[in-house]
Length: 215
Ligand code: AMP
Image (cartoon, rainbow, N blue to C red; front, side, top):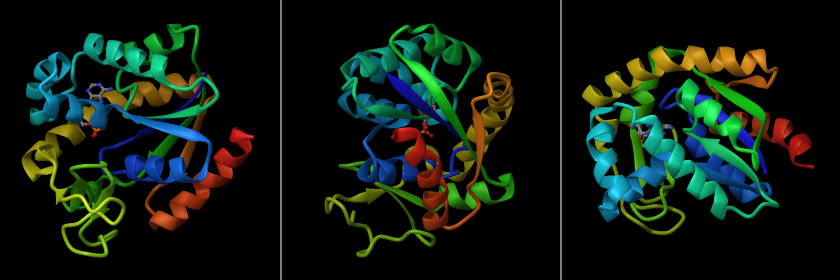
């Protein structure tokens, strides 16, 4: 099974873009953040363990994340390429992915955005409580305020998208990301995407790269 890893800070647009790409290409997106939010909502054993970390903007321990992603990948149709949004976040997670004989990371797309604009992007973000579609109050507003264009669900602000938690999430990202960028650069897999552009422009950069990769 072929994997594309999406790297980038919270608010760099990887989740929004991955969900759009799923509608255009034979790819399946898996977002570990979405999986955790669903597990927390259901109060499942993983959700109960992860809640305290997610709400503070800290990383959930590697062991929990590795088990979660492995069980999700087992359920995915082998014919599909997978876009991984939010995993790996640490070097042990990246190494666990490489150790899995059934999967192979073929490409890593690094969404680059200057850190000065990330806080505004994240605090204005609204997420559909039902289908996890992502909007922004200014940059990508829904047609009807507070309502998802796709499924009519209610748009809410994630608990970890408030300013205090966002600053911690960005700190955590800065700390872990360089190691991952170096790791995938050394494997010659990393491609940088200029994500400080309009949604449509970033989408067309991604389609160009992935079109060839998907065929
Ligand atoms: P995201 O939706 O990708 O921004 O993730 C939201 C939160 O879920 C993060 O701030 C972490 O607390 C947790 N999380 C998601 N993916 C991972 C991961 N691969 N490793 C550790 N924690 C994660």
